[in-house]
Length: 315
Image (tube, rainbow, N blue to C red):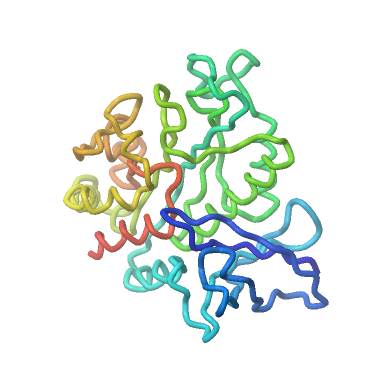
């Protein structure tokens, strides 16, 4: 079996994806080692770290499996760069609360550093759409891999795209988001195109976010205005705490313009895409459902962002 091990390195302020391939006679991936001194996770005198398989996907590029891994110290304790383990601990405290998460991941393909100033949202045609072959191949590859991808669409800037992950439990959704990004990077390698997850890749155009859709059993079943109101209040009360967990450089995107909220002010609204938190029409009319936190930037570490949110919502 061919196993492609994928993990997060120790780069700051955001980790990079790393990978290497193992050919094995086994049908299941086992613990493996790597050189942590080359990934900002160890020094050269004590360089060996462990890769612990935590989720296995079908490999859409070749026969075999993609293996998402946690990084462990030689004594099998979580490495300090291992943010996934903290999210698992937080979710343990929310057992029975039924949190479900979805991500709306936007990205920009650098086929053209200065795309024309037209609105390409959900458009069609060469005059406004760039990179559809990459976006659609990515969708198909994620489906083949077994990632919980639920859709995709062209965004406002030509060559800007969005895909949606979830809904799923927080750990599964975050795992799938990281692996979906890995698959996108590999497809862009083949095409010779750069992909950017920067929150504001072009200074005078719409930025790229990774909106987080969030619900709990209480919000999915309770009457509108109570449980959802409590959720929104807690997100607002913790506005200043949450923002640093929503991706570096995100203040350049959250200017209050171009469908972005103001970095320095928390707002919410029904169907309002200028608000920090939006209540979708389906939630409003159904009196229950999910809310959309529109503040997170496209480059979030989902483990970190979800930990911060869920820690604020320990009902």
